[in-house]
Amino acid sequence: MFKKLLSVLIMALGLTACAKSENIKGNEYVMLDAPNGAEITLMFSDTDNRASGKVVNRYFGTYTIDGNKLTFGPMASTMMMGPEPLMQAEYQYLQDLPKTVSYEATSNGLTLNLSDNRQLKFKKVSGTQN
Image (cartoon, rainbow, N blue to C red; front, side, top):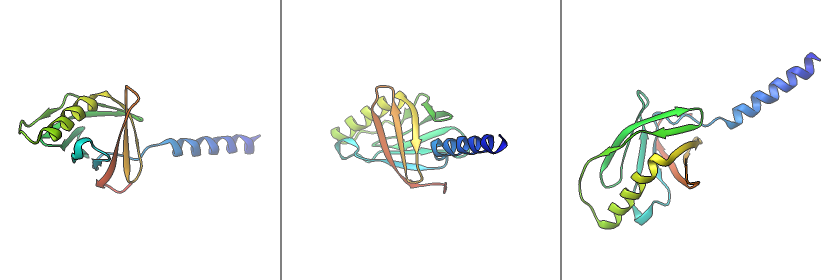
């Protein structure tokens, strides 16, 4: 009986470990396939729950993690003008970011799952080793 219980416990722990996402704190990401050729970055502070990044303008705000759930607070940004296609990409991205409901992270990437079933995919460019 003890061996069966131990086997079940080990299997359950193994499945839990497989489902766990990598830590995103302290990492910086760049969006894959960003619209209009924009370079969209996203960085998570490792000392507090602040997120920031850059498209045309720098943006910044807060985030909250609860398991694999991820939400962003209101974002503020600088107010510089840029080429219209990049400004459109920035506008759409800043509209999409608050729709984030969960995330999946690996050692080299990040996927933000949005409430409308779309995903934003990023490549890790710097940060902590997981």
